[in-house]
Image 1: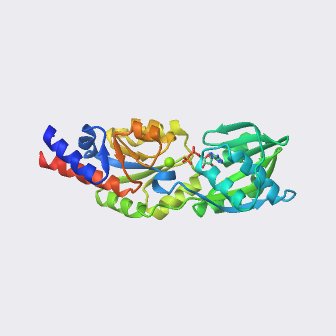
Image 2: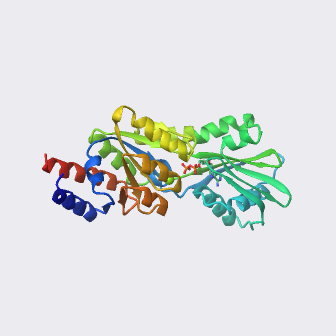
Image 3: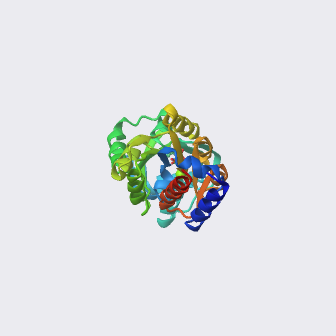
Amino acid sequence: ATPTSIMVGTGRAAELGVLFRRGDALQTLNDVTTVALDKTGTLTEGHPELTDLTITKGFEEADVLRLVASVEAMSEHPIAAAIVRHAKQNGLALASIDDFSSITGFGVSAVIEGRKVFVGADRLMSREGIDLDAVKSVGETLGQEGKTPLFAAIDGQLAAVIAVSDPIKASTAEAIGALHDLGLKVAMITGDNEATAQAIAAKLGIDEVVAEVLPEGKVAAIERLQTGGSKVAFVGDGINDAPALARADVGIAIGTGTDVAIESADVVLLSGDLKGVVNALHVSQRTMRNIR
Ligand code: ADP
Ligand code: MG
């Protein structure tokens, strides 16, 4: 493309709230055949709510919720905010904690009043040797409902099954339809539970799902989608998404997301609206068509 047509294209995109940080992204975008999307905060609002809480026999709900929320108060994950909010709404005062630790993609742990508390995904419980057989079907059902199942253990005993649900953004379904109309393959890449991811993907007609991945796993997933020379755009908002945004042929950050994501991206969508992805593709097509 000529420098002038690129300038016109980036200008038109800017009017639509799509900032091209690199001019060549406008050209590369026209060759993209797959759009991969992060789930939490990209396809969804990124503000989950606690929807379910089942307490194991022998434990007391207020006590478990207080301990769990006290650990989560130290975490920056949106799941943590949902749990803390729920505890506060129930009038519970948080306790002070020791030895907090956050295990990326697994969950959190701490010691409170001498009790060792773990909160996180089923794989955190497996790691800690907590048997989930008795609640396996509960977790599966929650996942099939598109909710994220979480588990809490206190002093080595399963104390609760918790679920959070993160609403899908109003703009998501239409944007995915528009990407399909452009003949693109749409994939989802997420650290969340497999069943949860599959349920949300099915609802949205997403073609391919990569779930339960760590940040490095997101890069590997992009590389897999690039097999055979396919050009891949990745859309994300989190710190976790930065390596994948850098690895994709075109990295697109949600402007309401983290600074790290924005800095790693070629394109920034000023609003959280996924229509921006479709607008970016349209402008790219028009720009490249003009010069051919
Ligand atoms: P994503 O951004 O896609 O949710 P993460 O790697 O941040 O991916 O998290 C993956 C999973 O790890 C979550 O779905 C959850 O099961 C677990 N997890 C992470 N942080 C926490 C937390 N603070 N409390 C409970 N579970 C957590
Ligand atoms: Mg995210």
